[in-house]
Length: 255
Image (cartoon, rainbow, N blue to C red; front, side):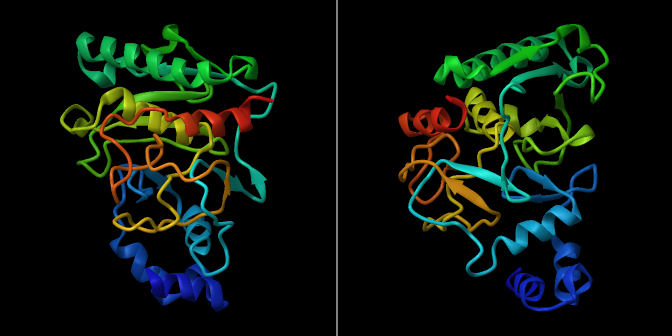
């Protein structure tokens, strides 16, 4: 990966360079052909280039902060007013039976409710459009929650606010039901991405892999953030919203 980063940031070869092509050949890909990075983010080749350029020396707006907002094309990647009503459907058939469908419905209601409750004045409103669940179509709702076997590439994956169309899916892998992580916590984490938040260990916490991209620091260091994976002595298997998560979210969405 280091060779690809150097090649992209210091030469004119760009994505046609040999080192980048070698990296593409070994990165895991999901059922849609997207490259899986940071454990739960699916990127196109173009997005991967931007991601790797964010790893180049001097490219990150780093610092000691923990809750971090993604930056896309130089702009803060979040939902500005009045576009804060986020409708979603749950692909009922993909979950196989009524028990799992009812469970994911309840878990989504709980997880979205926790994000909404942080700043009630924000206008953030997740709305489950249940009449779409029988046959959800991208575009009819803001995003779709689906169950799909990714072979354990991730427990769950989601998207950022700037993503569009078929990319706006929160996908649940079978490992969601077998991992040690609390299910609601996993959804809180993935909804954090949906709202624009990056992983909390991207500054290179010992024991955690270094991650790239451009981000805006919102709060002081918080190893218990819901966006911090269980590594480097940080994170928790519960994956709950910490006080600093709430503080940072209120900064972005509370106004």
